[in-house]
Image (tube, rainbow, N blue to C red; front, side, top):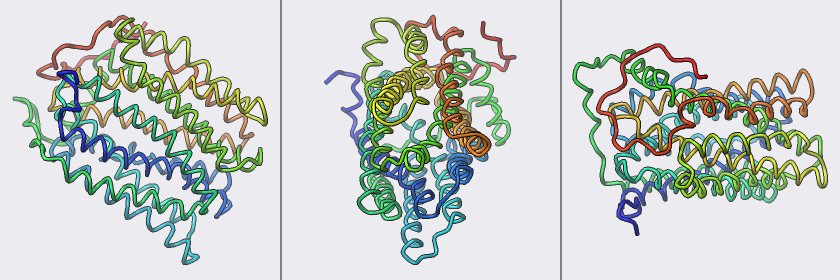
Length: 426
């Protein structure tokens, strides 16, 4: 085991196993919840789009203040409460279905409140990681966690499709609730729970001032700004596609929920391979060059997804999705490690919240756009719009100083960059 390996640290192992359970719940729910709307409640494309929008709109509503709140709290407590809240929310779905009182309104409320809990879980988990493993262990820790997330996309979404086919969609949601509850209980095993870092000297403690400081840190730095824009555009395109896929598979093509789960699992396999390949490729080519080349060579494969149809076209679309997600998997490891290394402890929560606001906010916007385009035109037109974003999202990073970076910063900055007008990337 390498000297800087995060696996030497017991608390990282606890966080990893809890994240495994949480990802299982998330991915089963990702398949099951929209299929509850489509199969059990006969939802229209616009209603499916609204459901997907509400599942992520919390990042737009409370994403930025959540970062400041997380910076003031013990991260373990944030993670535990968020997981247990998600478990309670999802268990209401099968109960209401069993009592024959399940409605779209309830589904909307569940996914909205679940999104609020997820805001805190995501910001807290990315903020606690540097404190558990140290700055030198971040690349491997992020590679391992992103590998886990990608594996969860493969196993969880495949399992979700199978569970829906075997048990019906509402019953499959029980697995989501159980997984979140198990994750929350496992997080009690983290023993190193650092107190919230004190504000840097001379910095204000008002919520608005703290939020603004985090936003300036991201948008006042050309590299962080480019990473945020590329990831947001990629999420926008991916969500436009993903929102319509249940309708394409189940209604338009007459395929099973299991086939939908396998298609999403192909994207998860791409994420998995990209996460595992990121470190060795970056060690050979440099971190920035790897991010730039991956965008130019791999992102255009997303244009194959709208060719989705029966037979060989299904395989071709799945291959395109896998390759596009391979690029995203590499971005997740190298981009997240870069932004964590460029941020001091006192700003980690707010930096992560700013990114989550943009990235997951893009999911909410993408779902809304998908629903509107699907209602006004066709679902395949919607897929083409999403593919256009996926295939060009790499441009902000490719045209920024990130592309010239060979290594990650060796030491964290001791204070946030001074506010300045964002420079225009060439």
